[in-house]
Amino acid sequence: MEARMKKGFFSPKRFSQLLLRDFTSGYRATLISMAAIAGGVLLIAVLTALGIALSGGGQTPDAELYFGLFTNVMFFGGFIVSSLAFKEAHQGGSGIFYMTIPSSTFEKFASKLLVTSLGFAVGTLVLITATSAVSEGVVRLIFGFGFGFFNPFSRTVLELVGIYLIMQSVFLMGSLWFKKLAFVKTALWIAIFGVVTLIVAAAAVRILMADSITWDGIHFGGNASGEVFYNWSEETVMKSFGPGTRGAQGLEAFKIAGKILFIGVLAPVCWLASYFRLGEIEV
Image (cartoon, rainbow, N blue to C red; front, side, top):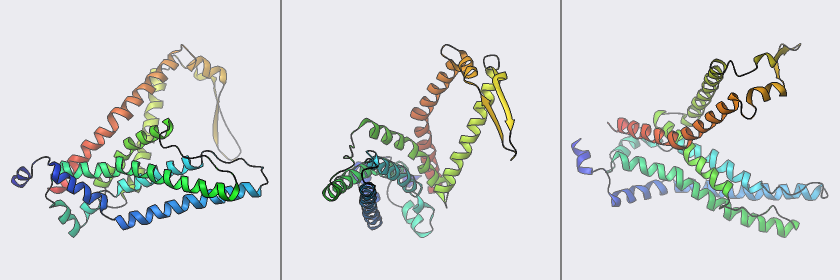
């Protein structure tokens, strides 16, 4: 406690040094990964263009090619990087060294958060924008057509960045709670939570809106392989969830509540839990 008081809660100079350390640690692996991603983007673009050229014009260039690659790199790559953010804290010798770095718990957490969230998102935007520009030039030079340049400032791209900054907090928390296989375990718990949420929501709808939903319009059946299915007719759906119905109002309320929880609650709760968990590890 005394040592923490001496360190203080936040020091701009100390934090900048820690932030530089986190950004530059493992720079070789980062550069190799960036080179691999850039090479992969170029290869995919050339092979896709080659397929279109060999088809004799039977296919049209995919305008969303670079956008899809950006999405995969940012989400999958970012989640993996976030799940490994505090791996050092769980290791023996390096863990002791990391915990004894002269910085507060808040500074350690804030540094990792900035690197894996905003830092990774901006880095991915720059990498894909530059790589796609080079790739587009090569493809147009060889085949005479392209896929369109990647726009990092489009509304869709910025919205995806916002979604990533929120969802990334879950995997950052997982990196502190799980010593091994943090990415896999975090993804598993997300899946379990999603299934439980769907079950609870379905039960709530069945109980709270029993008088509003036409349940007799659902027809259950099966086939020879034993698979069970149901058919909810369009007429039944309109009676239960059409404009002005209680079902439609319930869905709208559920949608609004979901947005509030996702945008305003999820990330802060994960940050707070991660901060206290890091403090426990330090002790």
